[in-house]
Length: 170
Image 1 (cartoon, rainbow, N blue to C red):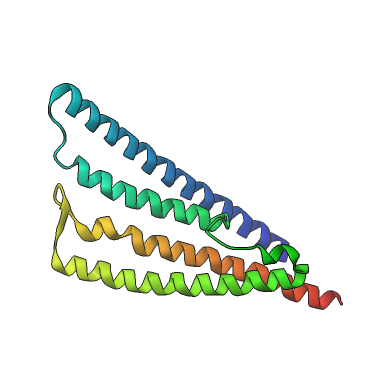
Image 2 (image 1 turned 30 degrees about the vertical axis):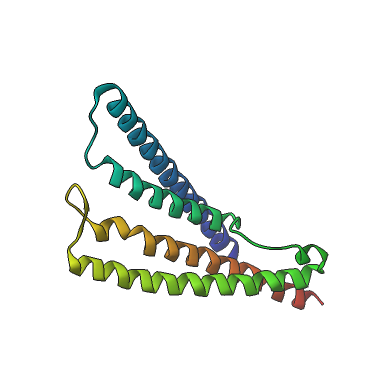
């Protein structure tokens, strides 16, 4: 039974990883295509798409935050781990667990406040570009921090299981 749950969780994580990767790929491809199109239109036809520049700024934000989600999933966010190399395994796992808790809490706080920000923007009814409301463009912020928070919640569970599994073996 527990093995089936573990396999189900592993499958779910693989699927979400695939979805995250594809979202990043699509956003990066769209950003490259719009930038290339804009360059060609400006240099060869003395014209351009009026809303392409704000869209490109938006895509940069979305690509950066989608990249942060992938980096969080891979535990590749910025960290200083010089001391961890010299620690015993159990202490290292404990440090990772503490770091995971801190990152999860900060990401959750950022999620909450970015949701508030998006709701304020929705009430203000400002437009980002081409009749697209600003709040839609900004939705990536709470989504990204929420997903990062979930990734670190999973890491917390994994590291605490490792810590307690080591205690039970003694």
